[in-house]
Length: 277
Image (cartoon, rainbow, N blue to C red; front, side, top):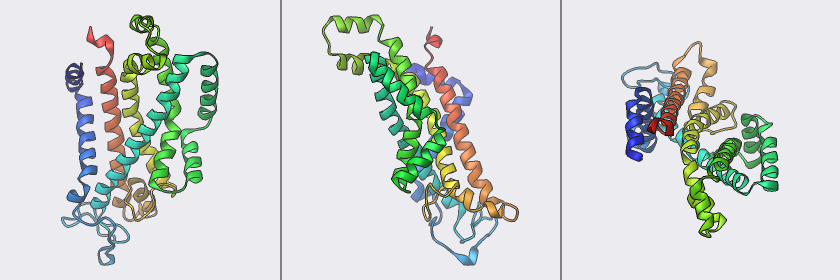
């Protein structure tokens, strides 16, 4: 199944391009300390606001810090927040969705009404509330972004569980006397994974945007930690005179999010069971 899915994914040129860019961004985040030509936090006021050149391909900021190095290290922050925030969303959302869909009845009603309350607030507003309540740090940012997005996983999982739990192999497992928890974990949930995986890739892109937006407002990643959103926000006042300071972080966010969306769309098509016929 994995080989067939990968083959269908590779045949999709747009998805392949997105996957390659995602891999490049991920490798950049992992090997940032080897790839960055300079210390991203080291100030050098003798070279402040230097335009792009051979020495500094993306120029320097108002403190003389190399923008290329900051963007490379910023990938580590964005990918870390995006990946672990989605992990938090999956852990909370899939658990709630599985309980609501498999148990049903009053449990389903209560959990879905609680989700309705969460979904009544915009995700971005919830993230701001959580960051303010938990504290301003990278850990709190991960928790905040993850908790803001978990209702989407819960809704998706509940719908998938409701359709899967009536299948013949689930009825056979019940007839054999398996525990409900065993059936839910080993028979129902694994068959709900394809849409969850697709949702995860798409929400990583949303988490990157949310992290950048929170940093843009000054309540996300704090200096001296390099962040695409913070660099974009800190240099907006110089957009008219030194545009490279905001353009390059903005382009990096745009390209990364676009790549995740391409990859997510291609993965959705590759995992579509109708394409296996």
